[in-house]
Structure formats: structure tokens, C-alpha cells
Length: 235
Image 1 (cartoon, rainbow, N blue to C red):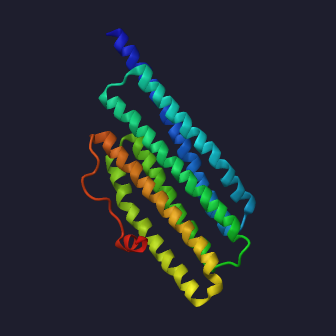
Image 2: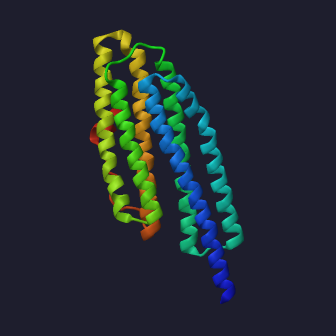
Image 3: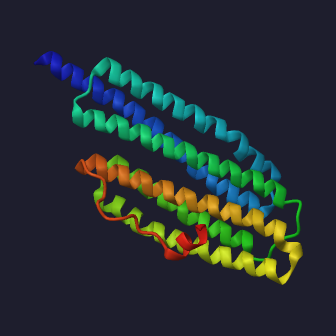
């Protein structure tokens, strides 16, 4: 019995360490998204390059999380509920790594846009959308740590707001392109930036759904709330 308790304690301690790595990933991703949006608005190429280069640290953390999870499974032989936790951690890390890629793409396009004429109001709108997505990602990670199903469900519902922000931006960029063909290239870059941010919102929702699965043993039965305008715009 003492041996079982010792094994359980060692597993919990190791799992806490892995979760700390995930939270560190989350912090880097949140900062990368915010910094990329700031670099776009201020036309700060040095900051954009910092974001681009910083993606390597996020990738390295995901590899570390995966290695630690594999070690946990091999050494601790976790029970079903504990194994579910380990697998959830790996899936969350994968979502965060993808968000880091999107932040890097934001930074790369902001560097290109810094050499082009400004589309009035676009950078500020992008920054506001990025801020909302950053808050959504933070809530999803807070829900993970607290195993808070209500907060996770709130993240799922709020993703629809991000979709609507993306749709509004898409229409704004389309208007700029129709008014002046010289705006087309810049607006296409801005559109891809907005789409990348919207995808980060999708991954925050995925993390929230994994939290629900972790806490209840079941994924949400209802379809993920999506804005019909986004669905139509993706066709």
C-alpha cells in the first residue's frame, strides 16, 4: 500500500512538472501574439523578428512536454484517469505549438507590411482582435489548471465573438481593395493575419474542449458554436 502511495505521489509530482511546462508554453504564446500585433501596429521590424525567432523556444517546450509524457507513461503505468490527463496535456501542447506558428506567421507578414503604405485603422483592429484571442487563450489555460468546466464552456461560446471580429475585418479589407486596387497586396497580408488570429481562437476552443473531456470524461456533445458568416467565408 505504501508503495502504491509512493508511486501515485511520484506521478502527481511529475505531472505537475509537465503542466508547468505547458503553462510556460502558454505564456510564451500569449506574449508572441501580443508582440506580433504590436509590431504590426508600430511597424517595429525588430520586435517582429524577435517573435519570429522566439518560436523555436515554443517548439522546444512542446518536444519536452511530449518526452516527459512518454516517460510518465512508460515509468508510471498510469491508471485510466491519469492516462487521460497525460494525453490531454499532449494535445494541449500541440495546440499551443500551432498557435506559436500562427504568431510567427503574424510577425513575418508584419515585417512585409512595414514596407508598404498603411491601411487606415487596420492595425488597430488587428491588435484588438489579438487581445481578445489572447484573453480567450488565457481563460482556456486557467480552465485547464482549475479543471473548470464552466470556464471552459465559456471559452467555447466566446469563440463565436472572435469569428464575428474576423468577418468584420474581412469585409473591411475587401472594401479597401475594391476602393483602390493598390491596396490589394497589403489587404491580402492583413486578411491572412486576421485569419491566423481567428485560428488561434479555434485552438483556444480546442483546449477548452479538452478540459471538458478531462473533467467529465466526455467531449461536448453539442456542435462547436461558429459564426455562419465565417463558415460561408471559408468556402
